[in-house]
Image (cartoon, rainbow, N blue to C red; front, side, top):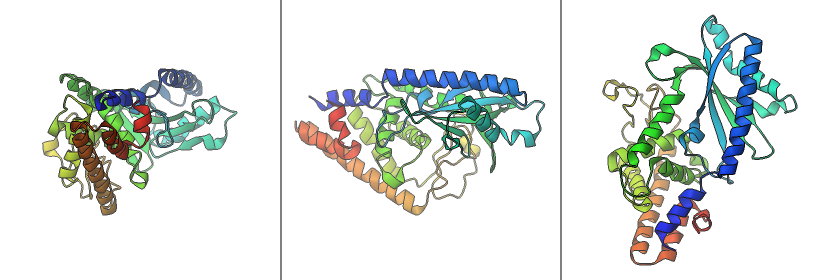
Length: 329
């Protein structure tokens, strides 16, 4: 089997199965319907709509493994009319309580209030986790479905549509290049690699942003192998020495960047540096992992050119783990 054929298999099999996605959709649809009814009956707030967000909506979600959990992200858009700021500040707890009332048989620990969302954990079946971000809708923002998450540390600008479009637009653009390489599937593979980095694992949004920066600089090729190597090459050359930002939803030429060690800005909210927690240790460690991945991808490319398919597989397993061998067969 050629490496090209293996990558076609691998990129297909690291995606959740259709049955898994169908069951997740069924569970989430049930939750959303019940949540809308609960909020309507309560009458304290108006829930206008709930939108799919995150990796599931962007078509970058991963097969469930020891390293990869399948979850669904939702944006619950509330109207701010006839509610005080103090009342809206309570939306995270309010949403948690409404969702908990849908599942009275579940333990209290299955409902967790995070900084930006309410997490609901299902421990049976496909063991789905659902994160629901309450968003106060603001039509004056001039961005589709823009609004604010009322976090304890300050309201945070967001847009489910803006984040989804960031990926879908680049996926559509990548289709202009002949061959199998598509942006969302590249993100999926970078996430798979990222999730194997132990204490250096980064959130999915960072993988999307870094992959987008690499594609903007290097473009995509007609094959997975060289496209992946170019992403690792971009990161090692860039070294996170300068800010990464995009002009999809704001003018990057007018930005005043934060004085953080690494700056990778949210594509919707320029005030949100998704790399703000990074220390020098994080940066150096991540770059070492990238260097290892680049070296392995280069060795794999050389072995493939020499007709040493088995050796090439070994090198790709250094990047993606032994599951590359089994999932690519």
